[in-house]
Image (cartoon, rainbow, N blue to C red):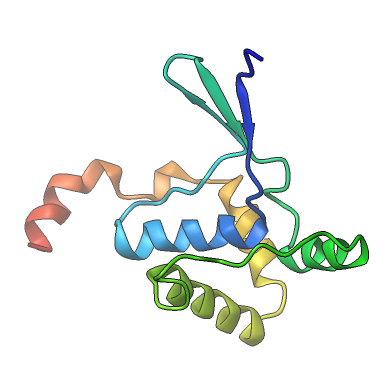
Length: 127
């Protein structure tokens, strides 16, 4: 087939979860992107539903009677991603619209107010 694109079903909540996972556990400000190149263009991962709310996808799948594939992961329900999902949902209950605003913030980084220039200082200070 010579296919070069792999479409994944990541949705808005996956984007938020990954952002907070990276922030809290990897100490990085990063997330997943809609199109990602691998091995110098050998193939690409595309995420066409990355900004679509999970609830919308579930509702549509239910209306269309799509089959539900169970999660067979032995760690399902007991992972860092689940902890982060709870945190994000808690934030949303305390401040409705926060999810959308956090995603919007990803489009407007302000490097002048991030501490990249002070990395060595912070590394020493926070040993």
